[in-house]
Image (cartoon, rainbow, N blue to C red; front, side, top):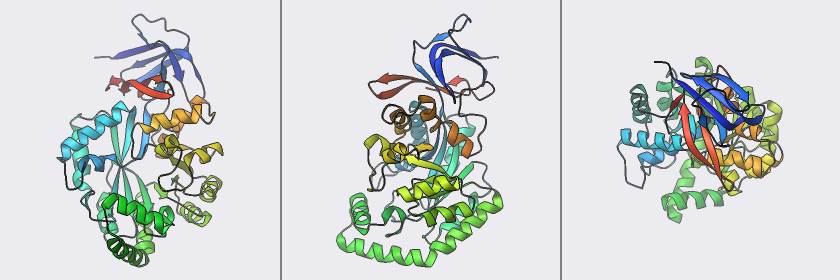
Length: 380
């Protein structure tokens, strides 16, 4: 049966502009966009609310938190997937790359060594049409851990896999150049004593020397062989960025310094900043703030990271705090991320694109998601 959706009296935000207008979708595709009210009877009156493209999220590790909501507590995997998906939908996220770690730093029971059970649960729920967002996969490979290559290899031909990031959270590296911050972060998260931290630092430094470069090279070779897109993670220097660019990296995730962000722009990498960093006004690791990057025009993509609702909130902050035109701000959480991972059927309000759309009102400076459609079907 043919399904039609007509929206009128909306503040329509396209890739290039925003205006009061109307949108029509038939089945799963946008067919018409026009300024002014719709002439079709029975249109849904937005009463001036924003009409935005569904958000495209490339980096959220919240699924793992649903699996392990407290230390020592493991939630049933199918239920964790469904709860995570619902959280995404009400945040306006209609396409997501579930970002799962391969290679853990501390065996605290908060991350599975093998992400395959989670991936298979997502696949099963998606095949059964139980999910509201469209789920894909982003594997975050911790290169200085012993089994990362072995655990990554089973995924290289998985059709869900859209992005692979190369990470090294060893002490003294990238995000944790400061050993003081490394201690503070891990002791706060895992409750380690000073003596336990000393042992961890010694072990992780040895692992970095033993595995870091060889595992990075092996994973890059696998990605190049199978045509997988690469992201670098927490680049701190121009040399880090140049090395990433030379292997075909397309996204610079969370550069930690101005030097690395500027080098990313020079080399043509899309710069991803953390939306929680932008909303809060500072990095939780005391690296460069997303606000400073935004003030210098060095933010291409926003990621919700550990707070799904931060994607939309952060994009709106780019508009109201940093003067970015609303259509450009919203592109950081829709069109640009979609383009960088090759999803050219979504990410903007345009005839012929998939009817992924969200209705947004404002509560002060906080955007409020009121309705969500994925492929023309209301999901929230």
